[in-house]
Length: 294
Image (cartoon, rainbow, N blue to C red; front, side, top):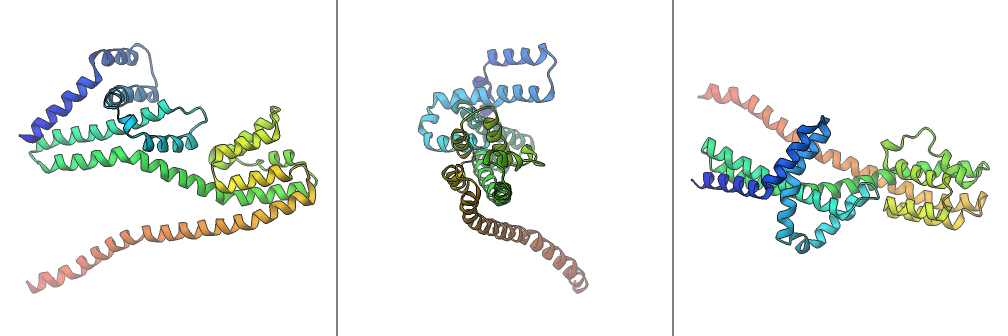
């Protein structure tokens, strides 16, 4: 009885939040034109998740109450996404996360009614909390993974830069040639490096382009590299190479540390499958003996 009441209440609340006008307007946009799958999926996401729960969070003033975590989430998305990412889009992502958790709770409530299993309602509450918090946790993991990727690749780019400048190239030409054979889409460092090179080609000042590159990367090691670059790029030649070589030693050590930590993470992830395989083998070996004894 409680599960049925909860399922009906959750569905009624969602329908009230969505609103008939919003349903009709977005449904007309879906059916009036031919849309590809991505656009249709985005409209459905706005219909079911973003619009209703954005209004709910604004009415309850949860955005103001949770200003600190929302700001932290916004800074992470600002690093991961394009530079024109706004706080409104961050709030939309937060509303979508809350809506996904609410949808999970509603579906599990209806499954609990149909299957007459009250445990499903409790499982729905757990799934709802996990799905709501998942985007916030995943954003932090993506930022950390991006940081490790940049630190791992920066020593190679630094070595190429030192060789090119030592061979007589100017710093700007060397920065451009470091990207030869690199696809900016496959690595975050290549993407930001390429954006800095494009800015230099468009006539932007060297210091402004490098400072923007530093802000977009948001990695301490890249900040140290850009500081050394700005202090020594006018000297060129041996002075520039010596300054970068000192930085290169520390970056290679950090790359080794990241490689070791990744190896430890990989070995720890193998523990659970190995334990499962061991349990299965124990059952296979012990089952015939138990059957014979019985």
